[in-house]
Length: 146
Image 1 (cartoon, one colour):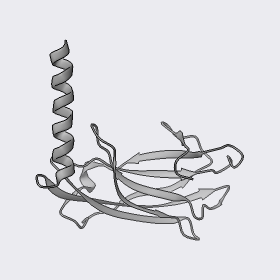
Image 2 (cartoon, one colour; image 1 turned 180 degrees about the horizontal axis):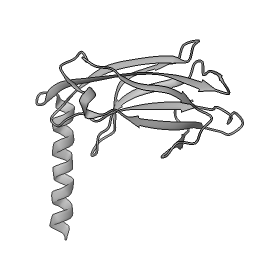
Image 3 (spheres, helix red, strand yellow; image 1 turned 90 degrees about the horizontal axis):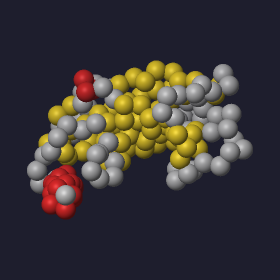
Image 4 (cartoon, one colour; image 1 turned 120 degrees about the horizontal axis):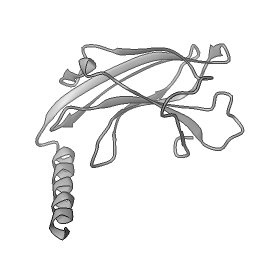
């Protein structure tokens, strides 16, 4: 039992170090765009972030920004990984939720077809127009991205 726990710990540390060292691995990129609305109007200055999801270490931030006056956002970024990146877009908002502490967080996974080998994405995933009034599967609260 002790050795299996130790083995798993050592293995996760090695994978984490390899991913962080960038000496091994491939540069991969992804991009996403979309429009956000709340109560029939553009959701302006809404925080959006593009991450590479990691299993054994913290997710890697690839890009971040806020929506413009029309509720539009575009994100693009790259990361060097030994395995395929797993890009996702996180949206942090308080649509119809202004009085509650912390923001609501929606995560949208980007399909593998939109991952490009190299630092510049060849395709952009369009998340479409999202009405933030709705309830989304997997929606959580985030108190760190205010």
